[in-house]
Image (cartoon, rainbow over all chains, first blue to last red; front, side, top):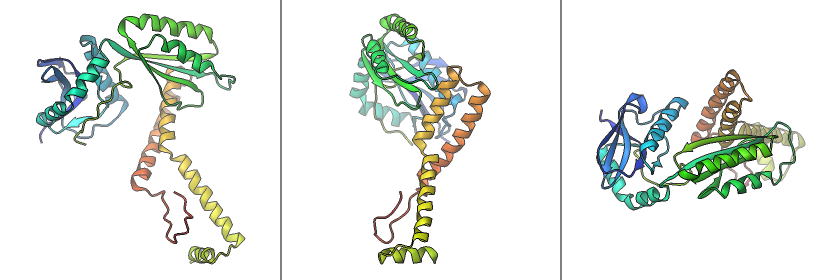
Length: 205
Length: 99
């Protein structure tokens, strides 16, 4: 059976490059270039890899590894699989302008996540979430609010922050934590900018 | 035949309290199923469980136990959504259905 191609992310790179056996099923991760951009991929025999915690971590670790050497990363969602190299390249060709725009938009920036939860049974949280979000927004290039998937969650914020302002942002989070001892802060990242770039490309699924 | 009789009576505009009670029970049962296997809600609970674990409010054992249960529920919810078996059809055209 012909090997399919699993895509992790797209980066600005115009040469072939190997990243080691860090992909799904221990497969080799490499760059597949088209003009001055590359898809970071690994071969994959399975058309529907399980979206398990373990596989999701592998997907995320590959992207984190790439973020070390690339100043601009457009991450793909888990499970983007293409039938072969030819199809993937033709899709990148079609989406080339959108890909370039996305790479430019996130250059030198990364995503940080701040979730704030109230202690069990706590009340009177009106306005606090807006204040926290507003303070962190000042240090960000772009922001988004995610779903409040728990009754205790009062803020689920995504922040696109310039790499050189990450320290300032982290200090702000610490200050807010001290200011609101009755709230719990879940600060995560740096992530590739999952919530700030979206390229719709057809996959073989 | 019991249900058919009920439907025929309804078409004729006749309501019998005993039969309405069964209908009410059915509606409540459907709503309960919808609530129990609401895919978005289950996905939210999976995220909540993970968040509370990462924040030290749930032990690894608690997290894993709840996660297993929720993944099982999600599988059923996905099947329900795929097959549409929670949909009832308005055969008589009365507009009286629960989706």
